[in-house]
Each structure stands twice: as structure tokens, then as C-alpha cells.
Image (tube, rainbow, N blue to C red):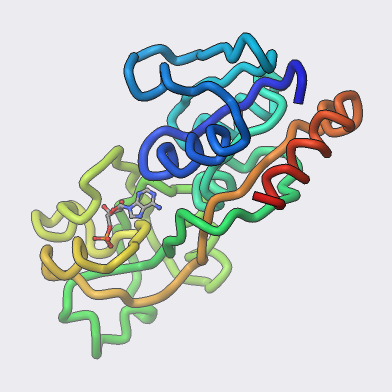
Length: 208
Ligand code: AMP
């Protein structure tokens, strides 16, 4: 993959993503031991950059990176125009609507003017609008489960993995919006102009 720039999402996906490239023989030892946001692998002429999950698709869409690894949740929230040719078998989670347990038997879908706190405003808006539900979407930047507890919102839209965080905050899942896992994404121009390097990388990842 000579000359490719790879954007990797920080957070939960970082360790397994770094593991993939280390298994392919790239030297990413600096990733663990420094705070550098860009690492060059001199021997293989690859460059790795590390960005927030929601930013990875943007780096790839604009060509600052040729390829990236990111969760489908962040990819679809970003609304970017990139190729998504390879689904990877890690980073599984689900984007759900959740709320206080009292909503279990309530016809929450019948309620008007619900406030929904989320880090996924685009996907939340799409979900509620496509079902004809009236909701005010409030964007927060973390600890989303806090919002219903203190009355900021009636519901949340957030990713769950084990469901433990919901449970510990007295919330229950009300609906699933999407299932997500890590995906390899490719810049549209790089897919053509660097077709050989991109194809080789994908083949090597698939054959790991
Ligand atoms: P859990 O308690 O295992 O259901 O994890 C839920 C918490 O972890 C929530 O605060 C989520 O925002 C976060 N989380 C779970 N899975 C992911 C993921 N794949 N990417 C980013 N955050 C996640």
C-alpha cells in the first residue's frame, strides 16, 4: 500500500484497528507511546492519522486520508460521500432509542413534543421524522444517559454495547435504529487513482 494515508478512529476501535496494521507488518509502535496525531511508517511509506470517530469520514471524504476505519454509526451520522467496501468483524454496537422504564408500557410513539438528547442528531432526526414522530432533538457531546435522569430530555438516542450503562442509569431500550460495526472506507478519487494500492490493502486485510 505504498503511499496511502490511513485515518483511524480513536476510542474503542483504535486498538483493534492498530492491531490489523501491525499484523500486516506496519510499525505503529509510536501510536501507543506518544500523543502524535500522525505517524509515518518509513519502511512501507504509509502514513497513519488518528481522529475522533465522527471526523474520520470527513478526512477521507476530502482526501486528507485515502482510507479510514470507523464505525458505521459515526459514518452514517457524518453523512459523507465515501466508499464503504469492507465490513470488519469488530466494534459491534447498536444505535437505540432509550428512556426511563416508565415508557415501557407507555405509547411513547403517541406522545407529542418529546425531547431527545443525542450525539447522533442526524440519525435521530431521520429516525423520528421517518416514523412521523414529533421530537425535538438536543445535541449533547457525551454522557448522554444523564439527560433523562436530570430532566434535560425524555429520551436518548445512543450506542449500546452490553446495555450496562443504560441499566445502571435506570433506562431501558425502546427501539433499535441501526446495528453497527467497524468498516473500512475509501476516498472516491483514491479508489480510482490509487486503485492498485487500495485493492492490495483490502486483500491483505481480508486474508488476515
Ligand atoms: P455499554 O454499557 O456496554 O452498553 O456501553 C454503552 C456506553 O459505551 C455508552 O455510553 C456508549 O456511548 C459507549 N459505547 C458503546 N459502544 C460503543 C462503540 N462501539 N463506540 C463508541 N462508544 C460506544
